Length: 120
Image 1 (cartoon, rainbow, N blue to C red):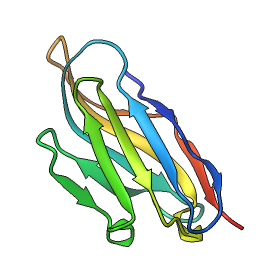
Image 2 (image 1 turned 60 degrees about the horizontal axis):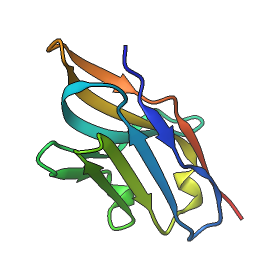
Image 3 (image 1 turned 45 degrees about the vertical axis):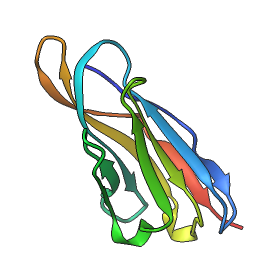
Image 4 (image 1 turned 30 degrees about the vertical axis):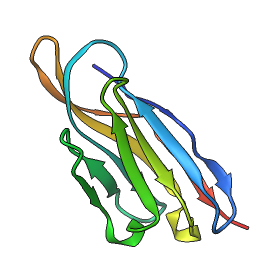
């Protein structure tokens, strides 16, 4: 089982910025879709943004124009740049990736989650 390694997150004031990073460890044959989800208290987990292997992206409506997802295929990483943060962005953020292992097994993998808190 492959677990993604996340970094970033923390406490920031409204209007501030944070950057989340996620790496796929080990040897991988191919990384397909990568993305970020979030889970706020009392709500269901929701997709924030995702990026395909060809770099096309899909963002949740509430983050359009504020969040940017990008990937580095050479480093097997995905980054979420979050600007103009709002209190309603407060949640645990999870990295997600659909990968194909060197054994040609396709898996959906997750990070451990990182807390983002937007508060004054």
